[in-house]
Length: 624
Image (cartoon, rainbow, N blue to C red; front, side, top):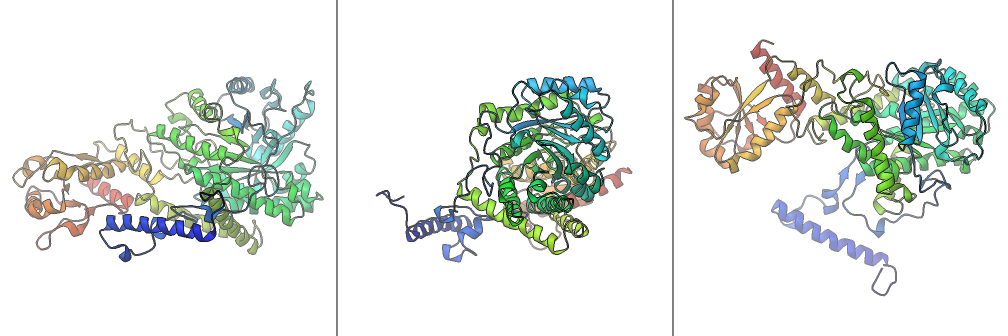
């Protein structure tokens, strides 16, 4: 607004943006020590960040980026939420998972669910075999208040039929709660997405037959985006494939005699949410926008409300320093809640570890996960406003761009003949996305706190190598955790009789070498290698510190110090029997002429490949 209270004109907005651009250019030019006219691109381009979906996140969003209103929550196009009746005092449903622990009886599960409900859980995600005693497990649970989602794998039909009998036999409550999006039960059948991931599932035909007769407040199909996310899919790929698989189910139901409205009413979506809070917010909003468009094309726009169950992404969780996972899942839960998820499940901080390798009691992990959401709901009051990010220029723009990227994935699937026909291509697309993600993790442009950055070599080693395991609840056979390649190195280093180590050769004062000794120690620790720092060395003291220190060393100092002392210390190191000497920093900092180090450790290298090579050398020398 202007001082007079009238809206800015387009010309004024352009002038304001140009003033910002000029100021930003001056700051960038000062940092690069060049003239603003010599910058290689515009300030906006230099400060923008591309996502894995090639969506550009710009440094500044202004009224120039303002979009038209998205409507109200619960109305087409449902970007702002699926449920117009959502209780702002309740917020989303805190959905806790049960049934993964070994040896639990039906009575034990019932007790666990009731206890969780008494401590804030408001939804149940139940892993149950076909012969599970659901009547006992769900005894005394108000099924009009707590939505149940089943996960029974190949026993899905039997478990679903038993659950429907429990519902039918349950006496009506004195006052039944109104049906809402967040209290809809899901039979949890996901044959199409499971066909990609290889999870045990049921035949599509059997699921369709069940869906045709499903009662009110029960939806049969749970289109599961975690099947794609765990294999490395990008956000746009996940939501595009969710829409493609969901549409395949709708087509099956219409072919079985259901109307589009009835078919759309049998679909719910499971969506993975990660530690990029804005991406998670936009992802849920974009999925609803896309699904509403599908419903509109089917002639049933008012039936296009996508019911979503957000689950914190198992692939982002680490096995090493797992306590950091509490931070990751908190950010993910925040994104899910602000993004309008109807139900949210926070996986335990130790969910990436097999049950036998967990150091905390299951009840502790579950309580922390539950309380993560309760703090957001009851202390931060995140759920009291529907679509709190709505109207944000950045979030609205990101929603639109992500929906467009997801829509392209969806239309590519359709061009190949639909979801089933496109499965082989889908695998190729996700494999390519995984390779790109792994490359970013390897060069640490996508850092992982506690693993590739600030690793803790002092934490207890596992009894066996676990980095590649998929034997954890909710995992698919294709689970490719973000941290797994660094954790493979940690497993390997921990298995050695003696911790692999590399000698540091700091040059000059602490002020001169501390930055690089810290960088190198952090890098080596990411691969399970200890950095031995004897303090500042000279050519005369290298032989003393090199005794018994192995045959790999790293020179650490400034460019000026390398020029002054580097050649002499390098020669002394070689004379002391150190076979391989590396340089901390770019190769170009080493003075020209004469002997040179055998490589460098610097920002941007493939850390996984470098650390693998170092471990190969160290273990070969140790005879292990």
